[in-house]
Image (cartoon, rainbow, N blue to C red; front, side, top):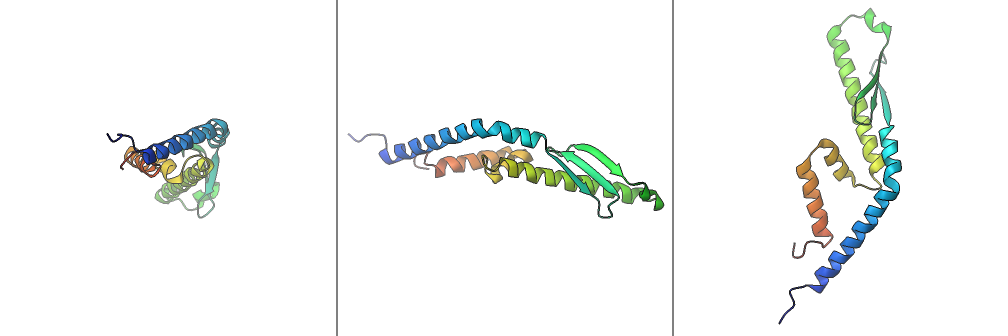
Length: 140
């Protein structure tokens, strides 16, 4: 009678389990320091004309907004609002990129980006792909 277990598949699963264990250990060892770096991250961007400065935190939350009084020399509320919005968005995008870079030693870039985007479908698809490629899903 043939065994229902595939030794090659089992070896692949064991290798993948060992890889997961090593990754988990790295997360435990390095994760807190990386988390602290990310938590304390602040990014400042200036508008194209240099009259607006926006500082955001790791999540893109506005921490500080400075508007140079020279903006009143050309009173244009729409331009001011657009410039403030664009400057904050650039700062938030830069903060996001830096958070991804901070965690890249532990979390693959694509997976971190999907997580930050709140894209659960993409996260789950990436995890399933990793499992298949790691040999943890026999026959997949």
